[in-house]
Image 1 (tube, rainbow, N blue to C red):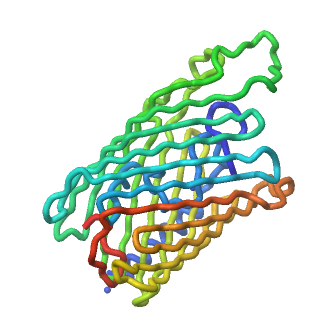
Image 2 (image 1 turned 30 degrees about the vertical axis):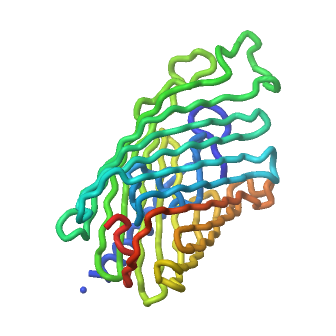
Image 3 (image 1 turned 180 degrees about the vertical axis):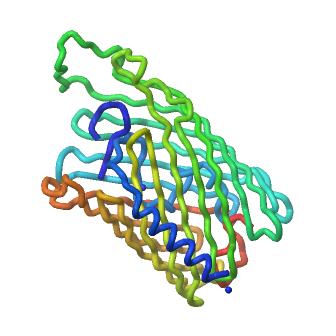
Length: 344
């Protein structure tokens, strides 16, 4: 369900122990009470396609020297003017130690979001600097990142009728800086299991976004938590549970689900894998997704079915997403077993 943030407008033995931990986390998150999000911040169902959009500390979490991605979301076309979101990301490795024990990465993302007949929306851009450090034999990897960005929200006032005719808009656009930070941890539990978790916060400075000159209209801090695991239960097959939680002021969102992945060819120059999964957005929607990974490319598609109180008006039609990712400098060697550490 497309939503709007707080501006006042309308409006994701060891191997066995790791599996129990992952399933327990998903079950616990499923029990948390949530309210529908009221957010104008970018909003996607495919959490893993461009993880930079969820946590800046995931910058550099890939095998290679660079990654570029684009994702598009179209929502609620059956109810009103479609809500449309487009985002692009880029990441590059600045420095890595000879044995990949530590390194420095830069990243950037830009997004544009438009909603409804007033074309209310936002344009945002951020630059990211992240540092990772491997611990011990490299099975554990820690990453920390800082983010500096700028955002602009705006609308078309021509079709607005104010309840109080004496009110006037001081401005039709709000331009503001934003700051964010994140931490992430990757662990190769065994040859068949890996996990990664992360926490981030955005809008640390809570910028002013008022159109009426009010001093208490600010973009609240947005907290994100994320967990993903992979269990390679067969030489060609793996299952990947995932959960993501976002909270901004009194509003929150919980998404959870799992993918089934098949590795068809792991030779580097002919790498081919396909995956499909199902995601639930608590009290809101259910999404199905599919992806194809071919050499250095990822092609992904997702569709949301609306299960919220808007279902009667939307006829359960929700949103679709399409995305493409390209990686450069991908390694020539592939590990069997679980997906190897994305950096090491």
